[in-house]
Image 1: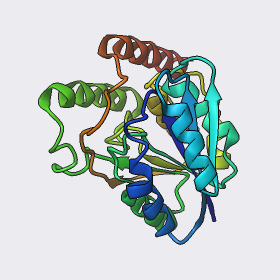
Image 2: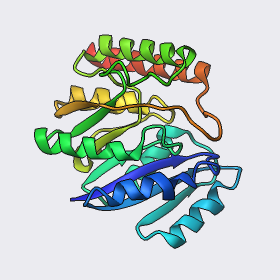
Image 3: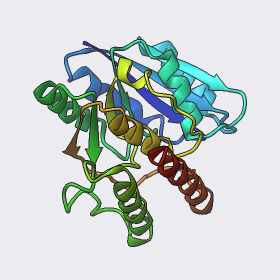
Image 4: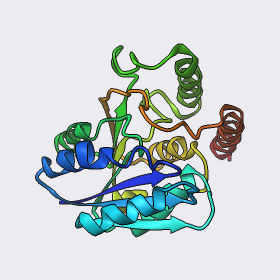
Length: 235
């Protein structure tokens, strides 16, 4: 097994020091061959310099840069194209889903042979316990709407923390540039009959930097995606 871990980065210089403390030990403990593909999505801080320093020090750490900020979805699609692994895991650069939880994704895949394993903070009442109500309710609403449109096979459509079979991921046509890409991937996996399973995952709060999510912009993007998915169902 060869695992590629895709990490989109936009102005995350404050969090990159956490990679040596939390990311790399967790990956080394998995006992599988792996690489990390960090996509610098047009950062304007010291993210680029910090990533290049890590790449010089850590074998199997790739850095790909966008000249301008294109969005989370575009960064993930760039990472997917560059990944060498048969399996692809996705993480936020702030590591709010602890990298140590990747082991649970791999274990679930081995047990079920699923094409996608979703780390869901909604499966367990403790999954969102550290998240404020202001952040929690919009996420709960968005995931409720996706369940209504795409089916209730998943509790979690929007979070990034997942494991994919690379060949299955590359077989679906992705269009999203923003945070809605995670919901798009889940919806297309389900509609195309790919096997999907979920495991419980804990989401924590970011300790450094700031969230790049714009609620109004992402609400509009989710609305557009939901409309597109409904149209596809009615064809």
